[in-house]
Image 1: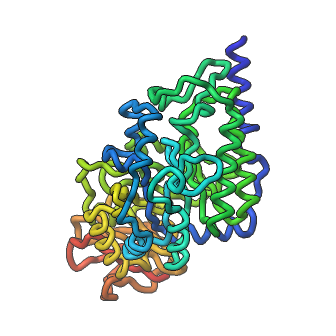
Image 2: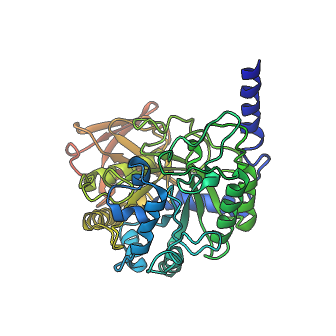
Length: 437
């Protein structure tokens, strides 16, 4: 009976306390959602003290580094080649429309000036520059939107190390040397105070991208009170969207749904088995294997792989958020910059078939995907060995052309659909046929 009671209480807490019940998005928020879906392509930036160790953003947890030793990194953090203009320009050159930056990752270090902790880039490092401020100013100057990643967990603070009635603690960060247990309510207040700073001091923010909610089992002792947190965000900036990387179906109060390392409907990485919602969708992926800088990781995906992932995301009615992990000196690795430039060259030609589109009337197939805008259907042929392609399209087709040069494509239509006759088996990175209805 006791076990049943706890399970019931956990269920009630999930439904009643962890979401913004009765949430009705504002007109500003609905406008943000539409613009977000139109933008289609963004840059994720994982950067913090962990870059100095060159072993990814989870190095503190993976190596069980004592927090008192880890925080000594701050006194040596001086990224002399950090240039916000170069970062934003690289994103813009790739055809990206927004940037999502890690304001505070799981190691607890804030990459912005905050009065609620001196463990931040301005007060704890000789660099003494507010990274978020520099990015916000440059994004505004170059016309890109700024989204902010914020970690729900913290491997350093003792108030993120409480003991609940079930005796549970966070599933990660258990080897970072914390021996005292603070008050959970203090941690919640700390997070909400920092979120207030981020949504007050840096101009319009496109979205808050939460991560780490998955770290705790849902012991009712730890009331995340996401409802109150979400309400605070929507009150401070009604147009700011909320997404939470909790790997489950979106909760009330969330404005978009994200998928980690997989397209919607796929789950090859084991992180994205959730039901696809009707909210705007976004999938995030790394350029190599790691999110944060890893000095040994040169396993970069090819330009073709990036283009295919972008196209498939659009065909799945989703945005693509591609990650870069800047070096400790502040520079984005040269290979990443080159990949971004090459994707940008492709986007200069084919951007019309991506921006402002939605998933096409033809579902995702092995040969590729379709995107749609108004009365145009863009057929993205990524893998086809034949010279003909059948599309189950019942709309009356006026004409079909090869998108890149508007050469007419012969086609035949009947009540079952449209058969495209190609002059040759497609060999382009993305062979795009444009149909007009």
